[in-house]
Length: 193
Length: 213
Picture 1 (cartoon, each protein chain N blue to C red):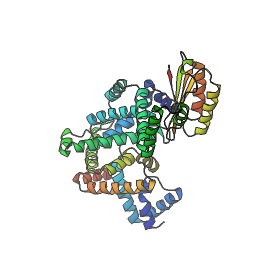
Picture 2 (cartoon, rainbow over the protein chains, first blue to last red):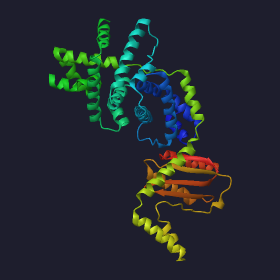
Picture 3 (cartoon, helix red, strand yellow):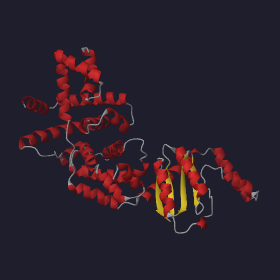
Picture 4 (cartoon, one colour):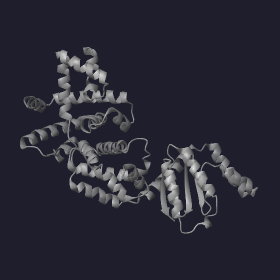
């Protein structure tokens, strides 16, 4: 069934249509929440909340942007709300570190997995130290692979702002990365390969 | 392309967001300038570190969110309540003091037994109103169609509403106006009528909600 038809059915109260429609975006939503929170437990919890929020707001989608862009906007806002809520509750960085970051292992060799998990931990640690603004734009651009126009629609800002914010976020990330000794090991490993 | 222009556009070049002319210019410059090539490599390596494949959710995630949705209130109920609350609150917030005073005067006037027909005419111009075209008694086992959103082709949708209202004898149409937003609900429609109307409205870009009465 076409996406437009599914959306209309959802807006008419058809729950089966909602499950079919969101089933197609399940991976994207989970991946996004995972990048914000860095572990499967939180990604599952926030991902479920995201689905409920989308369900409650589905009639607010008016087709002015693509459905995917609208979804990103809802999920990004939810993740930021959750981060602020946790800050408000004084969840310390130490607690997050204690809870741990679970690197993802796919179809990789053991050696690749080690490098991948090292890299994942490093990135997640640095992302967690960035401002919400910089973290969001890096997740959308570098991890989700969205283009400037899509990001500007999700964040409701112009393309010029996307470019300058992205540039500052990358610079901030690069600075923090260069302070980490592990970065040099990763960089050397990659250059040798 | 010189060093200054290359450096200025390097990030956009790596992001694939430059025109083909600039792309060719930067490519040629990078081949001939060792300094810019080094900057390019450094930036590319840093961005490569950030690149990740999307994370696949565990199967339990799909089951968990579906279960949550099944336990939620139906979409129609959730949306109906919230949208009406939002519209109502916006309307009340924007009513100026003089308008509120006028309403009080109207109520007092009505209470004092002034001419009913005059006040009924004024009431029909209030920003939030229900206009009954025909009696509600006229419909039986039928369907209700509500236009949730008019969409971009609002004139076409309005024409469909007008045409249908004039030809539709068996039911009643209610119009709710709140500021610039307009939502129409058709009641007392047969299944054929509801299908025809739905088709026309969706084609015109409107969003509708149908329920059995």
